[in-house]
Every structure is written in C-alpha cells, then in structure tokens.
Image 1 (cartoon, rainbow, N blue to C red):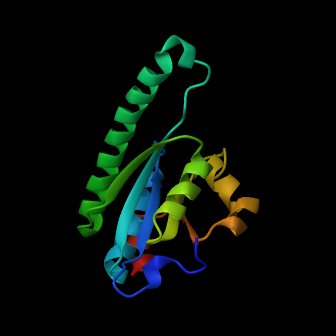
Image 2: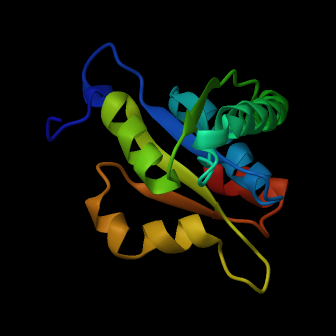
Length: 165
C-alpha cells in the first residue's frame, strides 16, 4: 500500500468506515459518521464482522453457523443503514466479513484505499469502551493507516450534530 490513501487523489471521495455490532452505542457512531459524510462530501462504508466458529468444521456445522451469523449481520447492517438514512440521507455501502475483528478491519482498509477514517462506538457501561475500542486504542492504533474516530456512546443526537457539523 502506498503511503498516501487514494481518497486524497482527484476524483476519489474519502470514506468513513463504521464497524457495526450489536451494541446500543453503535447507533452513535453511525449517526456521527453520517453527519460527517454529508458535511465533507464523503461516502460511508459499514462493516459487520462474523466471528468464525471454533472446532465445528468437521461436523459441517461451521458453515451453517457462519450462514446464520451472516444473516444476523445483514439485519444489523440494514438497521444501521436506516439510521444513516434517517440521520443524514446517507446511503452506505454494506460489507460482511468472516474472521478476527481487528484483522478484517485492517484487511478492508488495505483493500479499499478510499477508506480515510475508521469510526468506532465506545461502550458506556461498567465493562468499559468495548474490546475492539480497547484493542485498537492501545498499541494497535499506531499501526493503522487511517485515523480512528471513537464516538462515546453517551452522546445525544443533538450533541453529535453539533460536533459533526
């Protein structure tokens, strides 16, 4: 990968990539990214990641489990896309990947050089911001080829609108 993202070249639009999951805070990240997309003239990519099953491949169950989890991920993506449409009239690209979360995020960023920002939701519960945010905000953050935007799950729509412009 080159040292400069393709999104900075003439004719390419930057993308905000939002990782979609089952957490209630995820809607905050979608709302923020939607507002920034409109404000900056960018586009939006939503990524849902299906965890691979452990030790079920030999029974043929692994494939069925992945298919079932992929259907659930598709529903999550569509709900998030409705939020993006409602928040700012944005029609996001939707992608489902199977694998380890951090690895799949990095792979997609490397494959799609228009991705310019990674947007994550931070959990607001006692258990902390969430494992993905904790992992990426630590040592891994310095290895990412794009900025990571972490949206606190406690922000209201009005606060996000004011911050996102």
